Length: 234
Image (cartoon, rainbow, N blue to C red; front, side, top):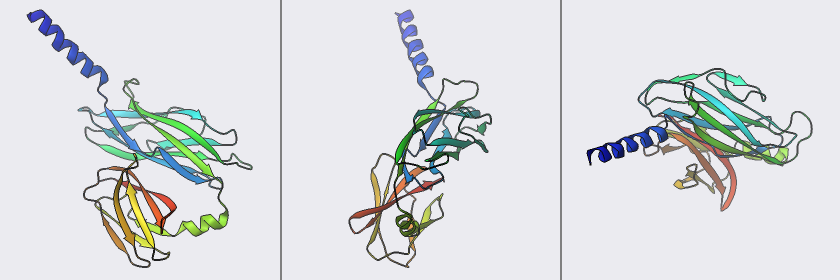
């Protein structure tokens, strides 16, 4: 009986050891931009949830990409070209520490005429001494066909400062009075809805928000006019 109990406890310990991960990754999974953009950006926050200090590498896998496009990324204070799949520099994280030092870029043209298209790239983060202990995020980049006039119209409709934010962000609208914003998490859950008045600064309290990347959906009336990213890093 004692031997069976010992085997059961040992098995449970082994399962926990095998499946526990050292890192937690939160960030963009779906980003939009124009085919005229030089680079469409995706951001992620990497947190060390283990009890050990880890040196973290980033590895990318291109799942799909138009022939006219390319992609690259920055990690550990270094940016890498499209041909680099694994970072050569590492970011050191103490237990409980996190960093927003990752950015992925999707370039719709390389160079030359571009067509609307979609790129899908997976980014995995892992301790340098254990490549199997990885946490990943898959980002879908959408490059849409927008005219220059439409882009200029959208560019300054709403501004956020600071962004990245901690406990609050200030929102200012240069557009009409019928503007509403909805702040959603990466799963699409609406967490806060605010009506924004033109030329009046609105302070948005973020005390109840956790660290991560959020989407700010901007509505003019009932029409979705634009989508922006809000990063919270407390």
